[in-house]
Length: 239
Image (cartoon, rainbow, N blue to C red; front, side, top):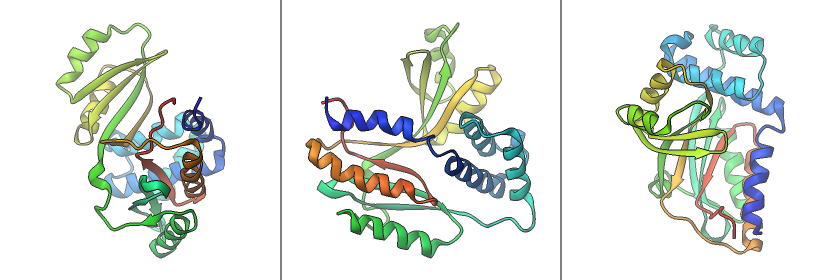
């Protein structure tokens, strides 16, 4: 079993390992969402997504409510979303999504990590063309007629439907994320998780030793509080 396959499983477990850090990131998601569309989740799809992510991470309801209040106050911290593009070792393309209240700090940290771990920070557009942005929803499959569900959701932007154990994974175009979110809410379908991801158009096969080099960079990048999501084109399939 290849190291990439093991790492894929490790990342799923690691994602929620540090709850304090997860809560901080959800709080920043809420701050961005409120800044963009207001504090009422009924009229702010992005805020509903942030709240949903908080619930999925077992974030207490009071924490979520307090985060919305802080984001709505006149003294709220001003966070911005920034995207970094570059390469990890062995030519692996990497996109880093971050949320920051100090862009100079974040740029310096990200550049340092790329450099220290054998990568390089690129310019805007240097690797973005290698990825497609997609919306992903994970809903419980119990009691669902998947053929009927697929037929109903095609008009709402569904591109692909994949059964996965006790869940169904739904894929949409980036622009159709809000429409799908609304369609699922209207049908009272319970969404366990939803996110915007970047899928590489092609992947690179690496040896286990090379995978380790890339993992070191990604792990260190994930430790930075400003970093939210990291996407790459390293082949993560079992090998």
